[in-house]
Length: 479
Image (cartoon, rainbow, N blue to C red; front, side, top):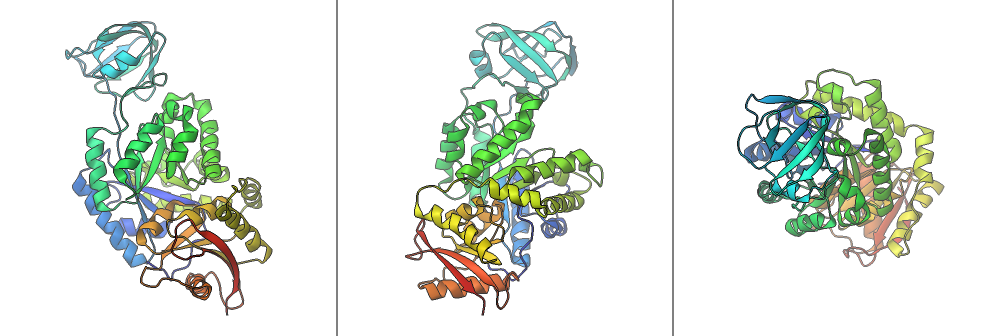
């Protein structure tokens, strides 16, 4: 899927969630034109038919616009909830005793069903249980065979089927439920580009999802559990991309810890060359207002300054009243930050040291050479995406064009900082350095980045068509 449209000046990508407010062809196309690079299908809501219809619309819009668009299928993961109450809700008083058990009987102010024996068996005296997105907190004071006796540390109203978070406990349950496995099979058969993996606690959770995906999509691991933070290095290494899922992470970590966790995750992902998305409540007020708060604008800007590859909108575009405005203002905030000289110097100063192999040396050199010769673009020939990822990690001062033989890889690169990918097709393979130069110049000119007399930097591998063989750097002048 080659493109003759101009590349966006914005380097940080935007992920937009689709839902009831954004499911028509007109809205999806408008969102893409306003700045969305990747669309998220949230499998916590909607039917397979709903998601299939949105998928088909996205692919039709992609063909109309002539540029790749990424699609993220975000699977739900285990949902831990209390049971129901006799009156639909109760008020728990701070300091009161409260039991969680396996009894099906509707709950009272003294007890309620907790239909998750895994929690009961894994909890210990002193464990914290957070209810209703952290609004209430219970502390375990006694563990029984089929119940937990707790004291209410922070009271409030608790109603039917509210969520339970267990920040202190590693639960012996997999990240993928039966529903998730069904959703995962469906999404992979559709042809999505990324799988959003929820409730990750251990590296084994990522390994399981990778085995199921079998290379058909990138695994985007959502960091939303404190236990994932404890295993962060190995989890990130096993992932193709990472999401800082600040919703659940913000429930299970103290509020003051979340900004530092965000920075730590982004820094590690940059070091390891893994794309990272910052998500949740970025422009939350725009669900019902046409403009964001100043604090929200600052939050988006902070993620850009931190070096995130992408920022994400959730309910703002899925269910909000102003989805187009939300994407538009997010794009404007990102673009404004990227014009700032301080941001540019921070990106350069925070470049990780290249690793000790040829492809990394070529990637590091490409940015340096581009700056020295004032190149208009770096053109990376990338069979599976690795070369484009390595060059993106350097945060070069000029745009990156990723030329790849398949639409699938071009779409996966939609989430990667600074990379605009084009699939050049396998029917026009390159065999010589001259072929490489000609194809790179054609791509730069078609993208309206370069014109006669401009210089571009080209990164490729010899022999051509072999993944991981990047070993050649060339400077070419547009005739």
